[in-house]
Image 1 (cartoon, rainbow, N blue to C red):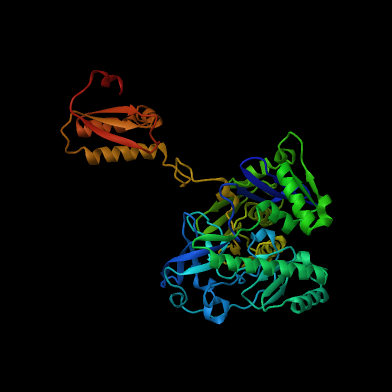
Image 2 (cartoon, rainbow, N blue to C red):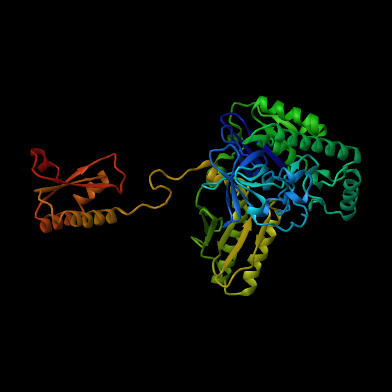
Length: 525
């Protein structure tokens, strides 16, 4: 399978697309004014400790307070250096570091240590060294951890744990054992390391150099902690462009194409320093046509923002995002099949499996995901759909967990979420419906107006009532729904005058009692 990284770096944002045989499968967006802070290390200050939630709010210099759970705080008394500073590494997710989950491999993680109550570990006003495990998503602030990890090209340094792991993508047992022994021999302190996929076949001298580089980086971060005041940034992760090149070029992509000449030069310099044998894999796109147009990617990205996705067979899936979970519904749509109903359902569900996995990866959806497949009577068919879903997610670099189909025909799964989904990055709630996704029907609005007029105007003394409404509602009240106006006038024994106001929201209306008529009112109604 031919893979290529296409980087659009001209303009106010950087977009990185990973293509597999010409089809976009992953896309990352980083705006210059709101870059992804996952992996950044800060000197923060505890603002508030919440024993009831076993969590604390931390000021790291952002507009929104970050938070940390007790399971992400190491017991400072367990380590010498951490008697003054709380640090550690988020290894519970079994990753190769804190880069976005779709840009690294998995490795075995060490066991977590027993935890003390958070009020025994943290106190308000305390300075703390933390790393961002997840950038702000929606209304949730950044999630922090004191379990620091520093990813390099071949290794991830975990300075707070004594653990050596090997990427699961390195399958040869002899090579895994060789790499583990090499790390154990070369490390000078009881720091933890994970050998990344790129470390497959690495020689001892290269591994030693990277260990020294990461160790010096960690020493520099500690010095900055003592020499700076909270809140402050101690270490920033690479830009999305350099992270993509570092994490994907060797094993995930065969070529990198960049449209911006300055970014191309910076990537070339980065590769010549760390991966000189891959410099021929980088090329500059110098045509006048926008690079994403040249690769026909804009349509795929726009499609990834829609709720409804049609399948080739004629069925479709609907993807709904909420604050806590993603719900996906599968429907037969226009597909009627050729033989029997059960076969039609099975074919639709199996095709939906591939599209669901593709959309989840492309949209970078995470957290709890509920999939409602079309009900199947045969247990064997349900198992086929479940096994197909498990198999297709084996290609996903983000950590996933899929449960069997429940008695209600639902599949529950989780996918690690670290950065914003594509939808949250590129979209915002509709200013008109305020994110509800639905508006009251025009007939319902008219009925609400009718009830509200009767409610407010029973004891008024004015000789007429003014209704200020959206023009569309005014047209309906003067046309199809005129019977409501007649009923109001009869019951209240007053004239009802309608004023269209184009600036109004379609659901907005205003009821005003008038004491005397104006000459032009007769023309309004």
